[in-house]
Each structure stands twice: as structure tokens, then as C-alpha cells.
Image (cartoon, rainbow, N blue to C red; front, side, top):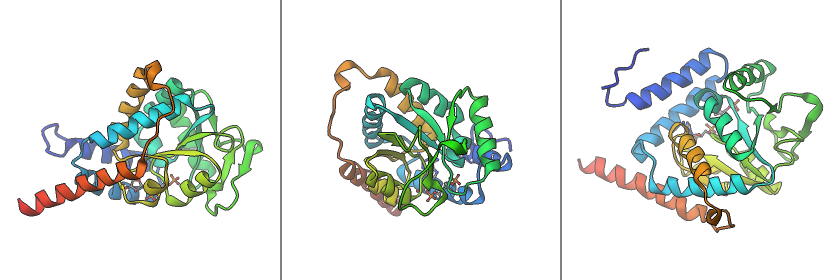
Length: 247
Ligand code: PTJ
């Protein structure tokens, strides 16, 4: 579809097209299209721009990823379709490993996603070789099967566009969890250590830049209050709704 640049919602329509193409290419599942629709709705409510609150979370996430001993970027169909280039760049900048981990797992999708990442410069991709598989206890979905060199051993895991159960389990398993989620009220958002309430399409680029620009003084443990930050995102939505209701 050709989207005119002058269309008032060109950016959002462009993101949608990327996801739909990812679906046609076999990276994204039908459920991923629904997840994207939920995201679009929340993006609209936060004003389709990166808030100060999101910038704050991005800085905390950059610090956590750069300071981690073994950071891992967990890749599902949606994030692979939307940001393949950024996943690879973030991995290079932070030294994070890339692991494919799917809710609706199939060998065919794993292969297509791996190819898309490799096309964008990824060298090593975890989560695709059965001999390295390990099981995360107390997790029902296919996501319980992880790579022992990756998520299983990681101290910090970035899980963008996630379902709630795994975040809770990963936390119980002692991992620091960072997520991108446009819905500040989702279980993932509320459970993660650091939630970036922003569209991955905007936020990933800012996260990469922030990692590159971290100074020595930035690289010290700092407290980040995720709940407080999430409340601010919810207030942005409330303010925007009020504005719309009074317009
Ligand atoms: O590829 P698979 O098999 O691993 O399946 C992945 C999906 C996305 C289907 C699965 O993880 C899922 O169902 O996720 P949820 O529970 O729908 O959660 C996705 C969250 O991401 C929702 O809260 C959406 O609001 C949010 N979201 C959707 N698109 C974006 C987003 N957040 C940031 N940027 C987006 N572009």
C-alpha cells in the first residue's frame, strides 16, 4: 500500500504496513496482528510520541543493558517484523545475545525470523538449536523452552511486546526484566523492572542512541521506580482523554 507522506497518520499506517508485511512473510501470527491493534490504540492515547516518562525508562534500560553480565534480547514475531535492524544494532552496542523465543512456536517461524535477523546482520542467534534447550519451570506456554546460553543464564532480559506470564516467571527466576509495552496497565508492564511505554518503532532507536551516549558517571547502579513511572504514563492517557472529551 502506498501511504501519502501528508496523511495525518502516515507514521502509524507505515508501522501497520510493516507488521502486515511481516504477517505475509510468515514472521507474525494472526494473534500478533491483534496485539498490534491493541498497541495502536494505546499509541493513539499516549499521543503517538515518546514521552518524558518513556525517555526516563529508556535511560534506565540502557544502563541496565550496558552494565549487565549477560544481557539477552528476546525476539518474537512482532518485534522481528518491526525492528530487525534495531535488534541487531542494539545487540552490537550492548553485547546482548539475540534469542528467538515464541509464544506460538513453530520451527517454520523460527527459521523465517532467523533469516530476517541474519539479513540484517545478526551473526549468532540463540533459541533455535534443540541441544541447547532448557526449560524454565512453572511456565505453561511454549516460551518455557529457552536457550541455556541465553535467557536461561541471563541476568537482564529485554522482552518487547510480551504476554504477562513469562515476565512474572522470569522475575521469579531472578532475572531483571525490561519491556516495551504501549499499555502501561498490562501485566507485563506492571511486573517488569523497567517498562518503556513507547512504540518499539520509536523507542528502539532512542534506546540504541542512549546506550551509545552513556557516560562513565551514568554507569552506576541507580534506583528506578517503575510503578511511579507507569503512573505518569497512565496520567498522560487520562489527560489526553480529558482533552478529547472537552474538544
Ligand atoms: O510471535 P509470538 O508467537 O511470540 O507471539 C507474540 C504476541 C505479540 C502475539 C504475544 O506476545 C501476545 O499476544 O502479546 P500480547 O499479550 O498481546 O501483548 C503485547 C503487548 O504489546 C500489548 O500490551 C500491546 O499493547 C503492546 N504492543 C503492541 N504493539 C506494540 C506494543 N508495544 C510497543 N510497541 C508496539 N509497536
